[in-house]
Amino acid sequence: MIKKSLSLCFKGARNYMHGTDMVNQAYSAVMETLAVAQVDAFRFVIHRMTGSRLALELRKGEGVSVAVAPVATMTFKAKGRPCLGVIVEDEGRPDCRYPYDEDSIVKACVLDREARNIVLQEESPFTPIETVVAMTKFLHLAVFPDAPGKWVFCRWESEHWPLSQKQAGLSVSLGQTLGTRLTRSEVCLDGEVLGQVFFSAKVNQ
Image 1 (cartoon, rainbow, N blue to C red):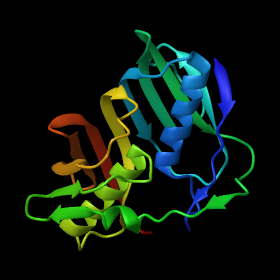
Image 2: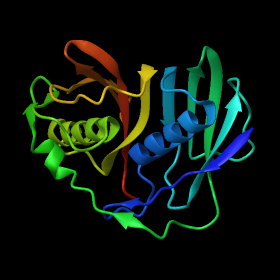
Image 3: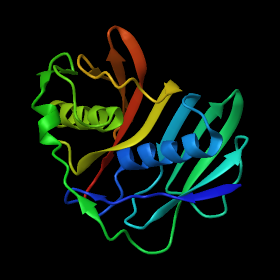
Image 4: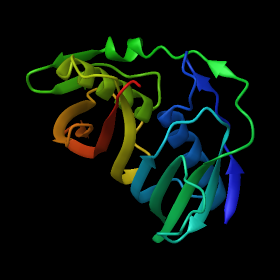
């Protein structure tokens, strides 16, 4: 097992580690550790929210048991071999924070509420996963205006990772509502399906 601390800061006004930062930082650690530029059969699942520092435990093989409930897990194939990444809490809390203008992403989008679809009209200054998650969140707020609580990013699945840096024309289509608190949306670019993004409804306590 290889363990690497992740360099994470609070995003905007949030007091928890944002899922998109977990994806980006965890994959950067994978690239550095395994010397790969792309992985296959990528699946990233966020199990719970936390405001603690985080670390990635990288293990070879799938289905490895974890003693402490992880914050997130990621499975993928690197050079044809199955791997498991487990994101766990580290000591302390981040002492840094950076601005995040999420609204600038949705302002560059065209929303079709009836078709449950949103399309990005220009390139985004943010990473692809940040752009996709912001678009999907805005789409959920438009389609489910009366939903209690808030919608949060909880899972990503795709044949390959990372995504293309080209983002103009990126679309998100809300497909299935799985039960009452989980949705699956399809992410496409230039007619090609890039992956599936899942959101869950967190009801305020």
